Length: 361
Ligand code: IPM
Ligand code: MG
Image (tube, rainbow, N blue to C red; front, side, top):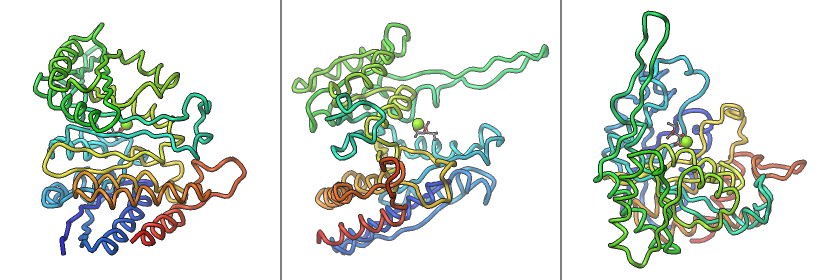
């Protein structure tokens, strides 16, 4: 029997509530498909700061390196707002991305037909939305040097972050963009700010050059400000998008609204030897600990884990089908339930999906 080791890093806030539901779903898949999963938990984020003093507990990175895939929850929260910048909970996640060379972040945003009315945007706008945001994850403003704050004697200060990309970094994420677009509707939108930033000019130059290797994919370049507007104006015009780290961070949150709720969006971070799978939503401190968080983003992230790290395509389909079916039956967590209707809690939603997955084997 094939056995896979999965590093489980729930992190903070609702990460601790939704990740166990994704683990339960994987267990159901394992039992059904005759595959062994060995889960090992480790600390990251605020939970790691509390226990060990730093946002990436000793051993966490090492566990990730010897696993087949990583199931991640979320990190951060008001409790650690005053922690020094370099030790903030978020640094744990950023260090994992960098150390594991997870340069390609895939964030699908799909508007499920039965959730059209959960989006605050009009039905006529969001209906039919099905896009994939590919965000570069290990470069740009997040990691560029120099960075830091200078404090002056007169009480003033100057802070610097640097947006930097090499042509090699742009080329490898562009190739992922074209490969993914090729398996979808063969339309790739490259998002930049080439009318202002030299980094974006290089980005556009390299993406255009890589496009020659993908004559079957239609490439368009869109400026990021225009893209932000078009996303809420006519999202169905987009299929696959590729963009740098910060633009991707912002646009993928915006895209979440098209899908009804952040609680629905999974992600995969790929590139290095082991992939990391994480719901796009954060720790949601306002609802943490209440048992009402939507576990679907975490469960769909587990489906991406099956597809991209373990090549278990059919099983990934089963998990996605289970989610669709449970939604079709009318079950909703609070974030997607129409006002005044009864909402399922986190474990209740998990139960429903696990049962549907079990029934498919
Ligand atoms: C995300 C998050 C992270 C990011 C934070 C938690 C560091 O917003 O994954 O989008 O900015 O990349
Ligand atoms: Mg973000």
